[in-house]
Length: 116
Image 1 (cartoon, rainbow, N blue to C red):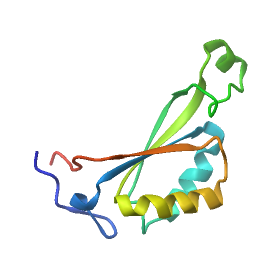
Image 2: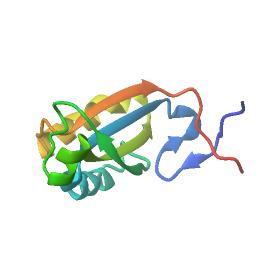
Image 3: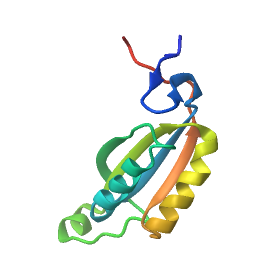
Image 4: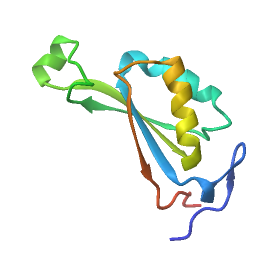
């Protein structure tokens, strides 16, 4: 597979983007987190937002429908970024949105690019 060598807006070469950071949160925190991410142009080249469901202690069941279904509505934000930028971004997020209901995971990214 040939990685995309183009440069995304800002300072981000696609070949430098080697990590996928996923944030999972309740719908109520989506706007606050996305607004903050949009301001982090030095660390975040962009993101994808997905709607889904979560189960477990970090996903409390707040509505009657969630209690019936046994799962909470969640928003997942996926960010492809440089691995050295993960820690500084998480620090900024923790300072601005100190919520135990926002959880994250980061995994190595084998390739990132476009089909054109």
